[in-house]
Each structure stands twice: as structure tokens, then as C-alpha cells.
Amino acid sequence: MRCHCVLCSVVLLVVQVWGSLSAYGQTAPLPLGSISTPVLQQQGCPSSFSTSTCYNATITCQGTAPITVIFGYALPQQPTPFGTIVFFGGGGGESPFSQPAVEQSYANDYLAAGYEIVEAAWASDWEQTSALGQPYTANIMTAACRPATFLNFVRFGTNPQLYQSGGMCALNRTSATRWQLPRAARFVAPGCCTCSLVEWLD
Image (cartoon, rainbow, N blue to C red; front, side):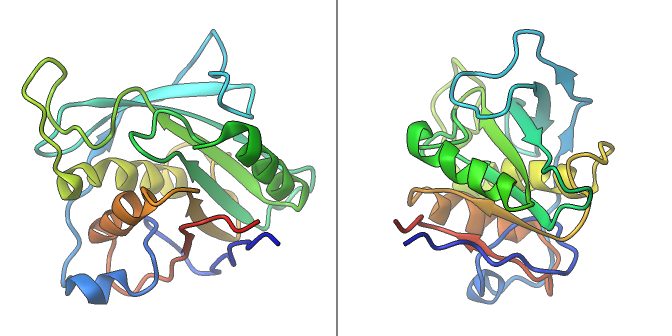
């Protein structure tokens, strides 16, 4: 049986798991980074995507090297989506799905059910905060600014197609979500209603 995420109906800045703000004792959000104007990828999407049109943009956060995010999105047939679901892959996140052959079907199910889907992948390991070629630095809290900045762009950015209506969630199949998404919560203003699904249940 599949466990589907229940979408929240209030405005979101970024995703977090329930209770993560109180767990960290957060009193003020950390600053988000910046994202460049997305550029259409002429070669289309990587094979791990279920969407056919992709864009890339550069995200820059304090204390990190710039990183490229590749993303695509698809709209449901109905004119007003029930919400937006953002897919992140596990590990270094270089694919929007940890198991594309399986999870792409989940994305298609959500699309058929009336939800917009956004698929995101990093050009390199999102956890590595240093520039490539430099000594490896893995600072999860600092790196979490990257997915937080992207999620903020999806919700409040200049492309109205990325978010139109309803709630918003970010989903991931592996335990990497326990690192990427809860720490992204440190960049959200307290009091926001959020939801995420750490594990898909079949």
C-alpha cells in the first residue's frame, strides 16, 4: 500500500518535517541564498527525469561554492492543481529519484491525480560545500541552504508555472531526506505548516 503525502493548505517557504523547528529550538530563520535566472536545457532532461523539458540555474549560499540545480516540471490536465510536489533524490541528489524505474511511476500517479510535479537534481553532490578540486567539506547545515533556496524559488519565484495553487511538499524515497529536508527547515520562518514523506511505503 502506498502512503501518499497529505498536502498542507497554507503558504510554505520551504519544506520541513513536522516538529523539526521545535526540535532544533529555532527562533529565527537562517538566510536563504540566491538563484540565477533559469536557462532552458537545449538537450532536454537527463534520463532519470520523467519530465521532458528541463532548466538549469546556479544557487549560491553563504559559506558554499555555487552549485547548479537542474529541474523540470509537469502540470496536470485540470486547470487548477491541488498542489505542488517536489522530488529530490537521495545521497548526493544528482537524480530526482533514488530508483527512477520505480519512483517515476509515483510522480506520474500524482500528476494523474491532479498535482503538479517538480523534479530537481544537483549537478554535483549537494552536501559538498567546498568548490570542486578543493579539500572535501561536508557541512549539512550549511549545505541545506541549497534545497531551501530552491524550494523558496519554486513557491515564490518568478515562474508562475512552478507553483499555482494548493499545498506544497518535497518528497524523497531514502533516508537522505532526514538530512536534506529537516535541515532545510532551519531556513524557514517559524510557524509555517509543512509536511514531507521520508519513506515511500509499498
